[in-house]
Length: 358
Image 1 (tube, rainbow, N blue to C red):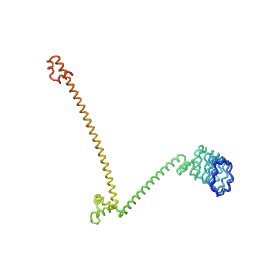
Image 2: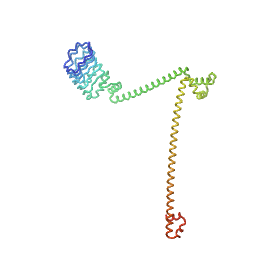
Image 3: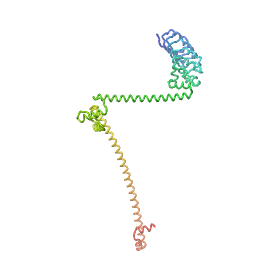
Image 4: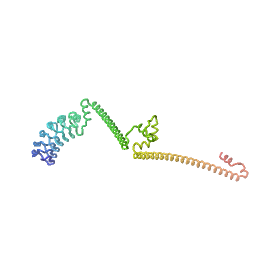
């Protein structure tokens, strides 16, 4: 038989001629001109009913639908608790959409929280949501099964809301702090568990590599004794005392590694170590070159400074000599023009220069 029926956007004013559809599970009558819910008898298998965007003023005629779980009555003309009081009798309803009606008053809360299995409720766009103080908190406290009220209702919010109902805002604040600490502790434990798992996996992989190499995992002391005996060529195990085994391991690291993990893996280990050593050397060379460049730059600046000072000194010396020569020549010319004996009055050019300057 017919399971789903779409009759939306047809301008129907009444519901009729469908009561014989006993196997109908989904009925869509949105966007019509319905003012009353009627003639649904016989739809005993109906699970979902959509009556949104009509002109319905009163909810009725639904209590006999024993399998109805989802009801959409959004964008109708429902005004108060009396207009939706019939929903109390619909004991199987779990999801109701009453968005954008005109519902107001505290009675709406009492009516909706009386629906025993209600878990999802949409109430956005109704005056009751904004005008009734603490509407959301009251709904959550009164309806223990509610998991969605215009947005999800999480356990943390429910616990804080129930604390508010018993002790007010202070109790709610304390509960939120407690929940926050519990969440942090759970995160810390999760990190610890992950690290423990990571440690287990790493050691398991380490043991697997040993098994692939043909050698079972041994303690450091046993491994050192065994490798020392093998490299000594005696074939017998000698005991390690003091720091002898440590020195032996340091001196024969490559041979011990190759014997423990196999030649192939040992080559890979050596290659990785060589690459790392090369990178370290390259880094050190680059650092040395940078220091050298800085030193060369400092020397060059110093040399430029000294050269500049030398040029300035030479310029001052040249000026003094020029001044002295000009002054001497001027005196000599003057002396010769006046009398030949006047030139002998000045024994040296330095003395004449001094006198003239004075």
